[in-house]
Length: 134
Image (cartoon, rainbow, N blue to C red; front, side, top):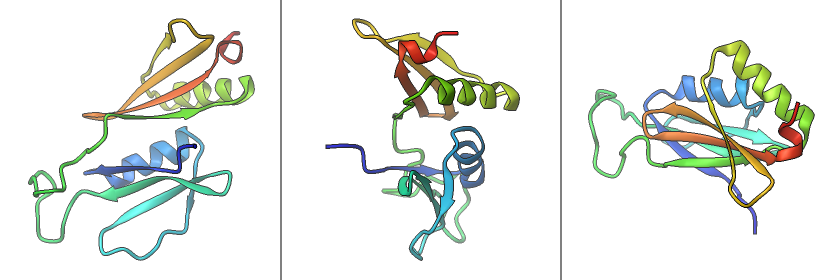
């Protein structure tokens, strides 16, 4: 089993899309023509992040609509497999002024990096400890 995709309902679709494309390194891609706005973001040819606009036509962005609470997830985790990719990710975050927190995973040889993308939505990047050194 593996993560197929995560869906994030967000009141700021463009900011979320920019984060995943400009910082996380995902690519914009094809998306079926759903009735609500959104974006599908791809890694290695697969749509792994589905962004959904939390607003409805004629409804203010800050109105809470039943069944459409935004954001609707706590966090998702994306695995970074190489030291070069890890360092490039951190360099992009630093260059963009994106704040993050790092932590060692207890009892493992892994490192986590957390980004607060929006109130209530945290993105975790995780890698082997040797990828995060130097």
